[in-house]
Image (tube, rainbow, N blue to C red; front, side):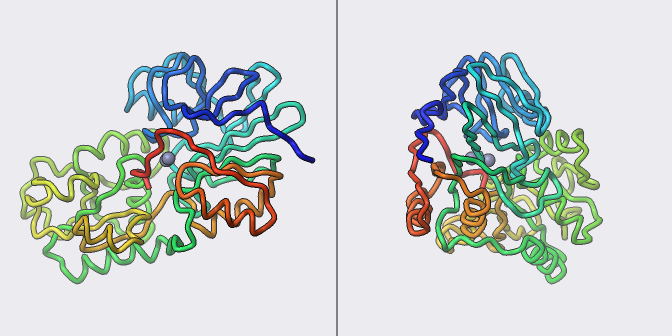
Amino acid sequence: MIADFAWIRAEPAGLHIRPADVWIDPARPVPRALITHGHADHARAGHGETIATAPTLAIMAARYGDIGRAVALDHDQPIALGGGVTARLVPAGHVLGSAQVVLDHAGERVVVTGDYKRRADPTCAPFTPVACDLLITEATFGLPVFRHPPIAQEIGKVLTARAAQPDRAILIGAYALGKAQRVIAELRRAGCAEPIWLHGAMDSMCRLYRDHGVELGELRAVAGVKRSELAGAIVLCPPSALTDRWARAMPDPLLAMASGWMRVRQRVRQRGIDLPLVISDHADWDELTATITEVNPAETWITHGREDALVRWCTLNQRRARALALAGFEDDSE
Ligand SMILES: [Zn+2]
Ligand SMILES: [Zn+2]
């Protein structure tokens, strides 16, 4: 079958489901938007109607303000969008509330992964592969050099560093939505039972995760706490805070950062990171290629990252593929 998938169009502002006039993760305000997850490069304010999972709607309301008419979908709950298009959201395993979009129209099925990963994550539902005709996949880490190590190994580095240098504060730079809560949950799983400390910018998302039933243990705010009390503390902060005055006020701070980009030595050096933690909420190269193989679409569109290598991999494996140029996707959540 050679399908043309004319009913879904990659526009610079996002993916447009034409018969229903609904946009997926649009870069500008539209009358009706389907949102895969709460990161700022996907979720924006100002849409007339926002369709997403309940946690994603809560994240958007907390971070971005006006989301218009909110339509909450449970994972797997179908919705008729109009124009003969049915949509449902299935877990993407990326952050709390994250979803892939499964679209059915005229006997064709399109799956839009949004951001996703295949590793287990105690803070969100696991990625569910869905067979389809057209797969539209992200490619943030779409180069063979990107292979994420097991997270237990990276978390182990934090605990080893703390045991070896008990008078220092370990500052872990982590994106406030998703990465921070996953790192905390994995520290707990590794046996860290003491309070974990938070920069003020981490507080509201941690609270939102807890309100959605994600267990994070005892969290404390560092604001106003005596410096001496933070010796041996593990402190989560936004990556930008690692290089500002806030960090220098900590007792002999050891700078760690949790990001898939910590695989790249130059980025570790540029940011002055002592303890790089290769922890990503995106699929690595092996997960990207394994997912395409597993979902086995007739055609693959690749966006949001290093499209070229993945297009080439598809071609070498006799798969139809093309790169999309969508606007406004950044990789700061990685
Ligand atoms: Zn994301
Ligand atoms: Zn993204």
